[in-house]
Amino acid sequence: MKIKLKPILLAIAALFFLPPKGASTDFNQQLCDSTLRIDYILSGNSNNQRIALHKLSATPGWAGRRVNLDSLPMRGNGQLELLDAATGKRLYAMSFSTLFQEWLTTDEARDCERSFENTFQIPMPVDKAVARLVLLDERGDTIANHSATIDHSDILIQRSKPDRLPDFRYISQGGDPARAIDVAIVAEGYQADEMDKFYTRAAEAVESLRNHEPFGSRFNDFNFIAVATPSADSGVSIPRLNEWRNTAVGSRFSTFYSNRYLTTPNVFHLHDLLQGIPYEHIIILANTDEYGGGGIYNSYTLTTADHPGFRPVVVHEFGHSFGGLADEYAYDGPDIIIVPEQIDYEPWEKNITSLFDFSKKWADKVDSSKSIPTPAESASDTLNDIGAYQGANYSTTLFYRPAVSCRMRDNDIDGFCPVCRDILNQLIDFYTVSSK
Ligand SMILES: [Zn+2]
Picture 1 (tube, helix red, strand yellow):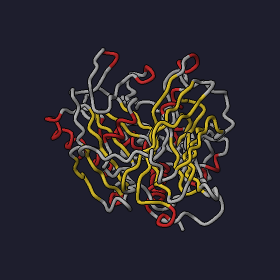
Picture 2: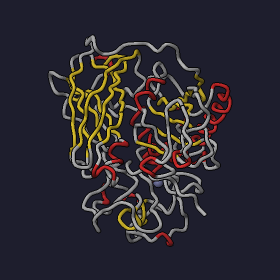
Picture 3: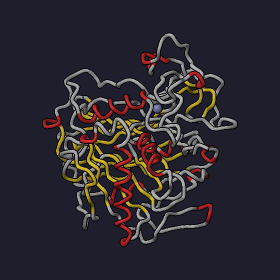
């Protein structure tokens, strides 16, 4: 029996989102070798959503991309732009998904207000600029926005240094942080005397990623740095068993009452722990054999390291948090999401389609002699025979996936489907290769 992967209700879309016309951003002229961290509180309910600025802080060095600064690789469920205050020109942009927007789809959000922490890191602008954050609905319409003026000489931008860095170790070093994609692997639920076990698990996570294309052939484009953040208690919180632990990032299962869904509400503290470490993406390894995890695009992957499914699951969740890939599975039984019988939009995630406008997805990769959608049974090669197979994104009927199976669908298959491999490869190019 296949192990079903945990649902992530939000994840990606097509197309490059191009910047406004004008010369592209010159990192050395318009941005500093310094990181501006912006902490936001996202709050509200299913009817009203708000964004509030919580804190600005700055640290020396910029580990993020220095190419394609003013473009977006995919739409996401939200975007953060840095705009020059004098000209309005876009200097930098990033897209993301949030746990807050996932929560908005739950019953609880109908009659309760809640708040969620979100942290983003962008390069510090040389001149006065505006940081504009937008949250988007499934059609790409804005549901909330916030603008803040950024002046790098502002005395209230916090510039404290960490008291002391946690112990860390490069599991793999592909290159200079200014060029490579920097992934921090964070210890969660490991006491100080359990760090040998943590480093072993971190190395296993990296090895599992390396065994998946395109990560294997692009391995030197990544740095993986394991950060030994100690916890007071061993293990993580499992609410359904009334087991609560005092851990580094305070993660817990049963997010939105889904027992396998492991997340942390303490996003600000997570980033506090990493201050001084060059990182762009985060993988949190939880010291438990309980099955579960979660991955949120450009936020974090969080997965359990002692479960037998650890190796495929950490790659699956990284597919969400790094690649912005959607889940390619549906649930047996009734659909869990409430949607109309037909969908009159394309989801933004690049590895699923509603067939509303399939030309924006992988239609050009489908053998034209085959009808679309192709029934799953027709595929001779379950991983590589590209079509549009019904059942994905938690629905058995409304969404279609590129292949019968994929790492984004089940734990037993060998790797990503060809469409996901292409998406990930293009994303690695986006972060590392100038398109100019
Ligand atoms: Zn796939």
